[in-house]
Amino acid sequence: MRFVYSDKYQLDIGVHVFPTDKYRLVRDRLLTDGLVSSDNIICPPEPNIDDIRLVHTREYVEDMLNLRWTSRTVRSELPLTWEIVLGYLTHASGTTIACRFALDDGVAMHLGGGFHHAFADHGEGFCYINDIAVAIRKLQSEGRVKRVAVIDCDLHQGNGTARIFRDDPDVFTFSIHQEHLYPIKEQSDLDIGLDDEVGDEEYIEHMRVAVPRILDQHKPEMVVYVAGADPYRDDQLGSLRLTKRGLALRDRIVIEGCHKRGVPVAPVLAGGYALKTEDTVDIHTNTARECLRVLGQLPPRAEEAVDTSNSRKEEDDSDSPKSPAG
Image (tube, rainbow, N blue to C red):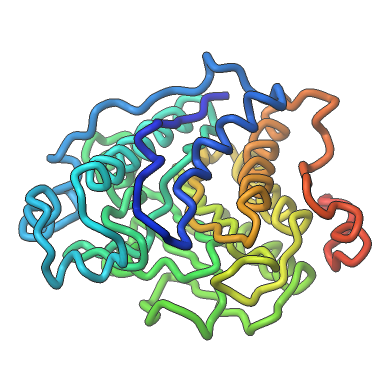
């Protein structure tokens, strides 16, 4: 299985809740745990600005390239430097190549991406470029795919993605998220807004119903899976109560559901703001583990989900099913 990663993802954004070092830490964990060899971690190609223009307006792209602090860039809640712009351009290139690999191999994962708050004409919520939309539009323009589904399981609704594809019947957008939280909601094709404090059991029930429905009714030729780590119960930005075990089961429902139907799937990382960055790294690593599991490439010694912090307590008070079957 191929993973996509670039050192350009670790950005200097100052003191910030967004841990941009998580990308490197996930890559390192995969290597250290023997889940993947360095040969299977691919650096994305140089970004192509024309690909970005398939989604984003001329004015907004020019603002970013010229580092202009305008109403279109200020809502990103990030600094605006060339290093940061290049990082986001590279994330878009990374999601695109991960989707290509998924079309070839069935599953491929981007150890980055998932910037679903970026709109066509402005950035928002730590997101400058909507890499999800760029990848889909690029592959559609090449005739590689027509019908695509975005399964967005980040804590926050994928508002930018929903707006970009609002009038496109070929792209089905699904978002399951905490309802009473940023952002101002757009309308996805299917939204499940969750109350505060929802844990594994209710969340997983929604997933068991929604994912087969999306795959069987929309019949996508590819799925981009936005595998946010921020529904975790110790995340700083939300108040859902999912455990690592529950999030791994969420991943399995999506990845296995796609694989059983022969639908290529490309997970991207999206959000994750746990009090301890190692918890966010655990959750993203578990997503990679589920990809490897479904392909039959997971080493036997790595069968159990990673949980490097407080694992016994989490197992004892988790409300998630012990078995992912079903």
